[in-house]
Image (cartoon, one colour):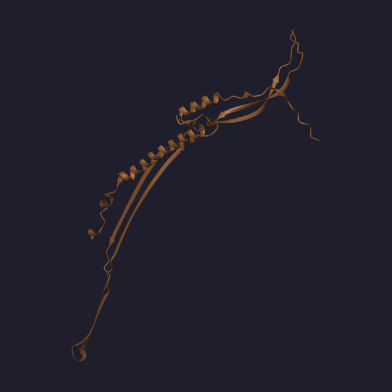
Amino acid sequence: MAGELVNMSDQFQGLPMDSLIGGPLTAACDSQIKLARATADFIKVIGFMPPEDNKSEVGKTRTALFQFKRPVEIPGQTGKDGAALTAPTIKEEQVELEVPLLAIVNVPNLTITSVDVTFDMEVKSSFETKSSSDKEGSLQAEAKVGWGPFSAKVSVQGKVSSHKESTRKSDNSAKYHVAVRAEDRGMPEGLARVMDILQTSVAPKSISQPEPVKKEPAKT
């Protein structure tokens, strides 16, 4: 019966542990390379225009242009003695604001932070033998002993039966679980400094002379 049981140690021999553990780690490394390349491609495509010649990889910085009007206070004229001759007036001027596109969009920067590899293998083996066979035999006999008033009648009955069963049971199971966690940890320090430099250069500039404010006619 002991020979029928599964040898537990034999079940774990020959498992490709290098592939089971190293495979997910290698895949995570390749995925990190793809994530970094996706960030670089995003900056190249969204942040820059196509190159004007074949000598450079990227063209000019891609920008978003905003145009709007803003009020401007025109100081009044004063005399030699400093007295006000005319009151200040409010006019409006047309200005535009050219902002690098990378400064107003979110640059994707996913990073794999953890890789958990869990391998659970459970081996269950049970062996139970029950011989199953039904047999039955019976015996019946009568005899008379003695004589005259001292005679007696003897009856003998017998019955023999047997029952056997045979059952064998085996159960093997395995679980393989890989959990990968990736999160956006924000822009790298170098890119953040470039964004700060770009933002300091963002300022509205006047593209027209100040004009009197046009009053809309009152609605009746």
